[in-house]
Image 1: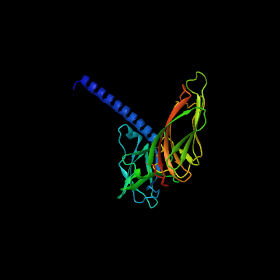
Image 2: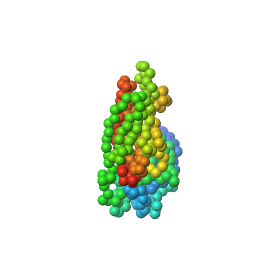
Image 3: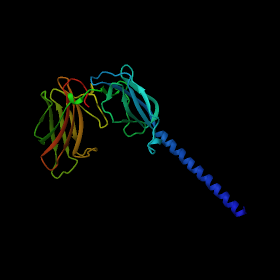
Image 4: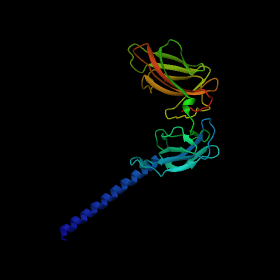
Length: 291
């Protein structure tokens, strides 16, 4: 090898070393960022049957995904935990950005929402899960032969109403329950958006609970209900997003029965009347399952 070749070879080796150091340093920085994005995974769950009774000995399968695994769509190895005599289970001593409940299994039972994966965020996730040992997340397991359609009574209702014209009453179920809507709107001439509107919602002689966007209630909660809930926007509210709104509710009647409904409505700015669509699932058995 002549002198020029030796020099060229040395330069290439040096460049390779520099690149290796550069890429190695970048990889280290990325790894540190990923580690900072992860958080402590702590999750409290409970498995109950259609009557709200705890189910012990249930295998709950789950996956934990770290920030470094997101791009590759990989995850930690599949793991299982067994419910105790109170139907409770806990996932702990893990780090990651998300926890997915993949399966809930016990012989003689079936998972009421089979095929649905429930994912909860941790660490730097934009919507982190808030674990609460006093209020574990409930999962519904029912006897294999159980049929929800024998009890739940779904129905869809369209409603038309005028703004600022008093309450609108919507019968629900077959036991005389009534949903009451009180729509009001403050629209200035020429105002296209940012106007004030609201709808007061209540169940006659009952109570309501509005679900957060990521809430899932296979069973109606026992607490947290209110007599009246108001949805809408104040004029020029910072979070004023649209005249269209969809919200989900759980309700409890005066007789102790439970149900749920979705309410979709449009605060029409061009007309004095508008419409809403409600989808109900009412359980008149006194049991809490809703799905």
